[in-house]
Length: 485
Ligand code: BG6
Image 1 (cartoon, helix red, strand yellow):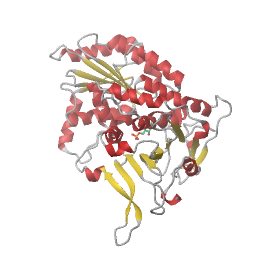
Image 2 (cartoon, helix red, strand yellow):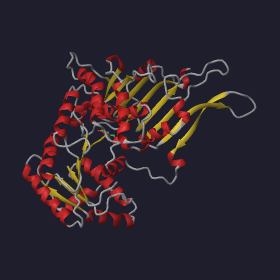
Image 3 (cartoon, protein in one colour):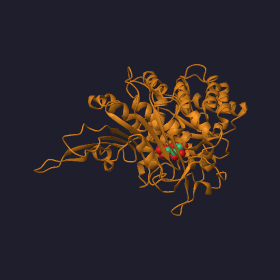
Image 4 (cartoon, helix red, strand yellow):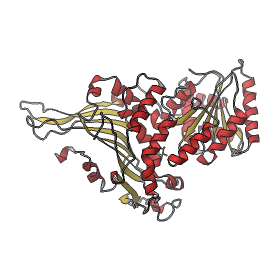
């Protein structure tokens, strides 16, 4: 439940993440009446700026395209319970000041209860000192709760993630920690549990007997423009596959949780992830984009080291060794600078037994996560008319047509609300993170040349569908396009 007298402290308040995601989400929650009563927002960062300058940044990504007076009023009210304090990340004194600042706000609350939610929108380099300083200088010892919300990257491989986790654990318990993977806040990712466990029809076909192969795809139509420095250190596998797509995979494949509680759900996710061995090199296709259509190649980005072999595209196939999924390939693929923006899950079913009809296309269930949220099932139906022939068609649940008045929440709105309520269901548990790194660490080390020669990614033109090798890669795992029959 929501706690009155809560202060949300956004550390890294002058950064991009706070500006683009955290503050607009907080505003969205406020606007819809979901923030606790008497909530206060405190921005904190190194940058020195006055309150006005802060308000400008805080609200710069809040949309009010039609100058709607109610929204404008709400923005003013939002500023009214926000404020900013500048301070360092490494020194205790700064955090003593922050603590005093928070106490002053709290002294005006009527009850003695004090709740502090620390949101760390910070680069990994200051992550541990901030976690430590917050605990040592800003922690409410009684009559209140303390929570810490943290963002990826959670390490770079299994060892560094374990180190990070155990450093933070010295100060913050699992109960107090909320690790964000913002894909878990997306409407269609949350929908997976309902689609699977509230329908007998999907449940019955959800295994190796019916399913041939599954693709989970992330496509972005832009490159690393300006963000190349960060990206080159991490690469597409750490940026998208190891976290966002693997999270989708775990919900898609886990067994039914005993209940809808956070621990029951996460127990099942961990269990299925533990049944996935580390990815084999032969199950990988790595790519890097090159200049095309007037757009620069990855290596043309000034912030990228020359000759970098960092993949901006990766397709990897994972195998789940349990009775439900033995032998079904799960292809996770993601790329920057592709031809479109799209994230989807595509479940391809097996062929029907041949004999009655000819050239029957396979059924496919597609869950489109973005844009234009949808669930559609490709199935065969009789051509309308006086003769019988099966043709492929679709059962289509496109959200904006079916739920015309619904507002799809932003992922960050959903997650911040969960954190305010103390619900961990859509946050990454420590053991989940550990097993996710186990799956990906060997290929990451291989890509970085720790096991000998560095694999060179194949190239693909900016704005294309991806490497030309991709079609053959997918077909190798049994995927059939309707035309391939
Ligand atoms: C982030 C990645 O985690 O997710 C970015 O670091 C990526 O590189 C982004 O662009 C994609 O998120 P969304 O919500 O736009 O699909």
